[in-house]
Length: 318
Image (cartoon, rainbow, N blue to C red; front, side, top):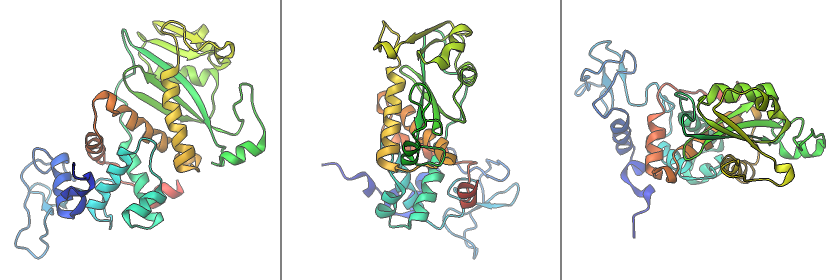
């Protein structure tokens, strides 16, 4: 029987966790986060300030550790506990709540909530170039969640709906999925024909074959689009697949996102919805079908911690 993954040394020992993080972030040796120097730094060994993992740059003379300039900077939580949290969030397909992290990691709820938002920030990917391209298919769709106050129950009580069943005060998420590839999800203030056209044309390569449903919100795109091909499927007439035309892939992404929001998190404030969307996008983009393991996913998230330091005030009061 294989040993439980959380029994591995870097999950149990803070020094091993530091060494693991250094190997991921600095595969060719320490890099000064203050000036970017790659010269071998001083270790301060023998001085009263010495501790393993503390370095002093030979160029700018600033001291640093592997966590400086990252989401882990100045945290009082042991680094091995941070790595456990990263792994749990990366390995949980529908997410893991702050309450569950509180119980599993032995921290307070406030700490677990703060940790999870920092890790979501690390999961946020840089969008390099457009989706799709020659011979590629990209599906687009939108979904609705809760209300502007963040409560699904509140939105149901209002009873105010637009055509097509979308709640007037709900939060809107637009997703673009490249078949066999990646997803990009955006929490948008409103869903209109012009907004959807702007999002699609700014994120999808012109040589792409684009698929959507037949919502009236896509009428402008149907009339005026700059893509190689554009097709719709008419769900109102029970048409879900027509040849290669369908939106089943993007709807599959939404099903996982909504199961997580409903079954795992229950309440998501609108100001945080983009981070949750980024979290689910990150796991989708590093899914097993693309050849990634839980360990690979965690390593990618840990490489994404640089330059994303968050304070509690920035998360809770922004």
